[in-house]
Length: 296
Image (cartoon, rainbow, N blue to C red; front, side):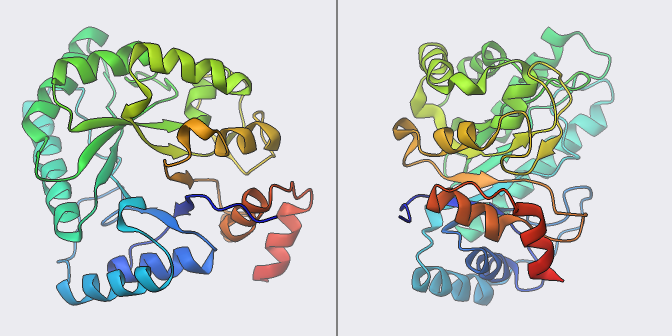
C-alpha cells in the first residue's frame, strides 16, 4: 500500500532554477523538496528568472507539488551567533536578508537557518547575538525563518529545546518556527526511539504549532555524541522502524518531511529508493546495492 504523505528531499538549484529543482524532485517520486538558492558554501548568486519561476509553478501544479511544501535552506556560511568581528556578523545579517528576498520572489514560505556557533564567545552572549540578528532580519511579508535543531558539534547553538525556546520567545514574533532534524536531535542527546515523548516535551516547552519542517535523517552516531553525521535510511543508529514512525506520526502529518541522507559513494542520490521505501512502508535491506545498480 502506498501512503499519501508530504515527502521530499534536498535537490539542486541549477540553471533552470526552481524549475530544475522541481524536475529533480519529481524524478525521485517526491511531492516536496528543499533547495539552496546558490552554493551553500559561498555568496555567489545568479539573478532569478521570472519566466523560470512561472514554468516551475506550472510544472509543480501538473505533478502534485504545492509551493507551501517547498523549503529553502540558508547557506552554511551564515553565523548569527558570533559578533567578535562586527563586519562578519553584519555580513551574515545582510546576506540572510538577501536570501529572504530571493525566497519572497520565488513565493517560498519557509527558510531553514542554522542558528550559529559561539566560536569563543560565552554561550549566553552568542544566543543574544542570534536573537538580535533575527530581529533585524525577519520580514513579516516574507518567508518564515525556521530555526534548525542542531547536534551541538563544537560550539553550535540551538542544540537544546531550551535554547530554541529562548530564541523564539525573545525574538517575540509569530514569523519564526522550527525545523526538526532527526539526526541532529539524536546526536544532541534526544531519544528518537521514543519520539512521542520527545514531541510531548517539545509541545510543553515550545508548542507543536511551531514545527513547519522535519529533516528525516538517520545518524552514524550514538545518541548524545554531538557529531552530526547523517546516514542513509535504516543504516544508522536510529534505524528504519524509528524513522518510519516519525515519518508517519499523525501530529506532524501536514509537515513536510525532507531527506538529507548522503549520496552513495558520494556519487549516487539515494532519494528515489528511500522515498519509495517510506511511502510503501517497507524496509529495503538491499538499499545501497539497488541504488548503485540503478545509476551504473
